[in-house]
Length: 213
Ligand code: CDP
Ligand code: CDP
Image (spheres, rainbow, N blue to C red):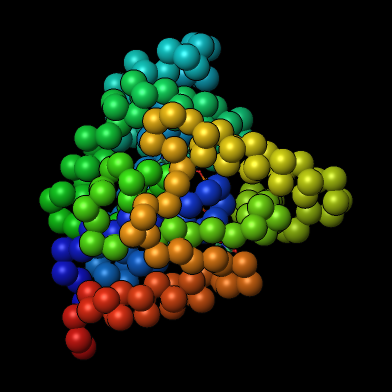
């Protein structure tokens, strides 16, 4: 049913942005870009080089396609380092145009923190996906370990890491994590991935953005 829609999906860590954006892209026949990978890959290259994270801009400028598909971009150390390099205006500036170009040619679904506010302020539709920190911590733990945390302390540590990264992402000066004024909010506690997709498709339908089939 695809027009050349440009769709922004933003939200805090482990809210289910990627899961939704990917499913939506497939449903609409659009390309999908996980913009967090740019920040993760920048951080990974700086960590590997033993370079100070304050100097990460040179790694952002040199990023290649292959850096974005590395298997070691979703570790806890990269979570925090990515959020640290993402505070730097020069890093963000180095990555901005590539994200815009991706959407410009064919339409696309992008997910991240500032897609609706900065990267694609003219997107056709913007979603802001959230869940409670506890729910997001459980999801991230299950995603990484394939089971629920056995100890309450383990879950508590995950909740802390998530809250700390949210706070860093929300409180930076440049392109902070924040819903666009025209974003459609979806609170996903108690919803599985299929349930979230249903809400989103219903919204697109209501807005008249789906081709009648
Ligand atoms: O992209 P983001 O960090 O926001 O989250 P994700 O990687 O899409 O989702 C994190 C984990 O939560 C994945 O393992 C998803 O399968 C799971 N998930 C879920 O349990 N319920 C949802 N409604 C959405 C995602
Ligand atoms: O999947 P998860 O939500 O845990 O993280 P991610 O989307 O891969 O993003 C990792 C980090 O990159 C975030 O904590 C942000 O600091 C940064 N980021 C950003 O600043 N802007 C974006 N558009 C995407 C990610």
